[in-house]
Image 1: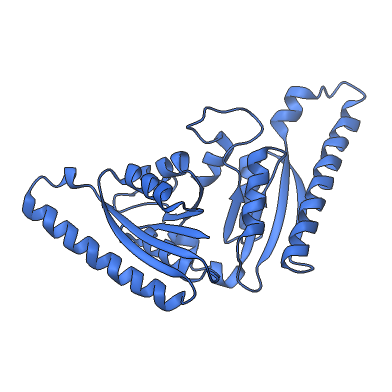
Image 2: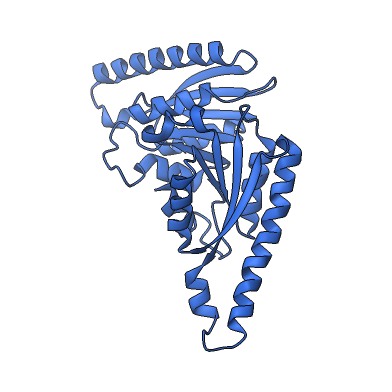
Length: 277
């Protein structure tokens, strides 16, 4: 697996680095640590040179940390010059990255609830899977190792499951697959006055359970018996995913970038974006 770590020495970026240090990167994995310096924001040559020097020092330190923690992986680093989002996305393409890891906010990230602009832009434009790490929960990951996988019947959801199956996870990792029968879907398509509505609702739950049971069987075959379980819920999809993550004390939420509806190519599905934010 090729892992691109995008960082800027902010607290959230440090949490992202620490999350990679705890990953189970086997032989053949490559990790590249990058930071982007937007010199357009630094018009004076002296400031530009200082920014370059600080960036190189920071990357050299991060690379040394990675090499010490991940001896089986090939580790490298680079300082990119240009617009942050463009540089990270381009670096991911050039590196043929399978995964981008970055913090939820950069140096200028102030909001507790909304994604930083660079994180959101990379999440929308990246050519591969993106893992957004929050500072607040990063310290709980090695304790819980709980991975919540939110699934539906879209191809993007299937790709999310394949990402989990093809990744290496620390010993003791537990997986929970969930599906949410949307209240909005029921309100739009099921007429409560229709005698067949209850039967159709039960069929929705039954079909979701059958699909999740198959996914759980694959996970248990891959990672060992009893490592995966599933649940089906009814409610608002976004809030149900977040509520389950809180109840189960998930260290990571995995979901597809788009749901069943066709979306514009450059924008995440509303549910994925809301959960990420």
